[in-house]
Length: 118
Image (cartoon, rainbow, N blue to C red; front, side):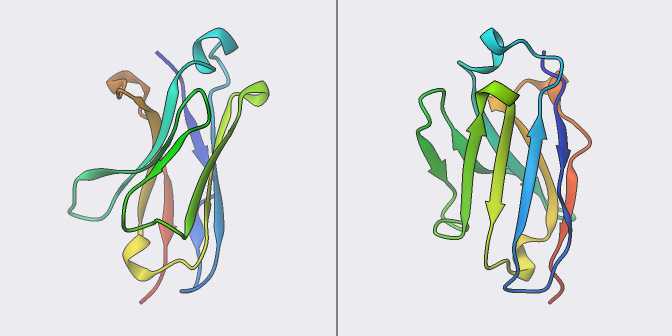
């Protein structure tokens, strides 16, 4: 089980940028480093969807809706995963969460709200 803490959300106008951060402060590096990490998001009334993932070898994958706009990265020395979001759109409005792949149900954090007014 990893304790995950997300931050960096906020209100931003369409076309703007945000950088989300996910920390795993209580996870030892021997557990964090080999774990594929991912960002998920849940819009109001919607389900929680996979946005981007990064493997232990830094291979990345993106949902079609964010390709070319979002970049996922990780810093294993800091046990941290980032999501750089550029050219934000109103449809990106959601609560953003990080977790692993496969998901650890007990590791969901409080998420961080991203709001892009239409």
